[in-house]
Amino acid sequence: MLDLRAQYGAIQGEIQAALTQVLESQQFILGAQGRALEEEIAAYCGVRFAVGVASGTDALALALRAAGVCPGDHVIVPAFTFIATAGAVMLVGARPVFADIEPTTFTLDPAQVASRATPRTKAVIPVHLYGHPADMDPLLAVAHERGLAVIEDNAQAIGAAYKGRRTGSFGTAAGLSFYPSKNLGGFGDGGMVLTNAEEIAERIRRLRDHGQTRKYISAEPGWNSRLDELQAAVLRVKLRHLDAWTRLRQAHAARYMEMLRDVPGMRTPTVASWASHVFYQYTVRIEGPGRRDAVQQYLARQAISSAVYYPVPLPLQPALASLGHRAGDFPAAERAASEVLSLPLYPELAAEQIERVARAARQALSG
Ligand SMILES: *Cc1c(COP(=O)(O)O)cnc(C)c1O
Image 1 (tube, rainbow, N blue to C red):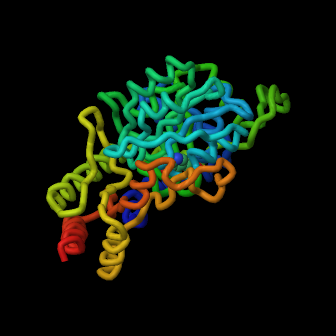
Image 2 (cartoon, rainbow, N blue to C red; image 1 turned 90 degrees about the vertical axis):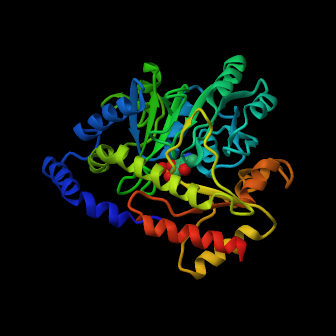
């Protein structure tokens, strides 16, 4: 699905120079690299502030806490996303309330958000899933009407745009993940909070460092959640290449679209008219009971990887059984979980490899 060694091979010299600089400084926590990365990412995403933290999950949890979400509050999240979206809600003691997705883009359905909000709801987390932005205007309108904070889960979509403006710049705050497989991935865990609100940025700077306002003076209970200097140095090198990598992802996706057009039983990704999609994943739908799994097995027999992101909707996860959801509660999410298949897509993929995958996928469905 991904060849990180190919990427490393192309930028090895730059990375080693950046790491050497950190090693020679012997400064590993909250230093010059982290501060520079925060400024560069804030500029890249079009926000005033960015605060480095230890993971994307922590970025979301700290953003919720800084936006005033308290234990017992309700937070609306999509029923179809990675578990960390709901995990972040539970980390601050709040309760995830699920809303179904809009089937063409796999993102939160604004009408569903309106119908699930109650006076206990404090926030909503739109997820820009697979690199495709959620439909922000109607989501922001519902949130505004109900007085909800909007925390964008931008873990999969750095560089994507909604109506010409970068994702992560619309809400109260947003979370980025630098997990190695993400479009901008570090050499370990890492994350960042984006926000235009100075008080939220300051609160997160405090919360990520034991609640300290000064050394050994803690204003509130905090966490230890910092992005270290080695990761920041790696990410600064990779950020310089991100736009070129994104253009390659988009070109590869266009090639797949061309080759997979009109395959019976398969639907290629929809890109909404207002979206610039960064293709963290190239995810098709394969309709019909059991057919998705059959296609995946067919590809595997030809040594072609593919993956299902995600096979079980969040409301049906064992960890969330106490919420009492049953099959049938979130039909669009459940259908997506049974139909999605992500094909290999990363910048270093060669044209022949894409063509081989596409031909095999077509054969799997016409054979
Ligand atoms: C990766 C991811 C996260 C969590 O990020 P980590 O850095 O792994 O903690 C959250 N939400 C989504 C949608 C993700 O893909």
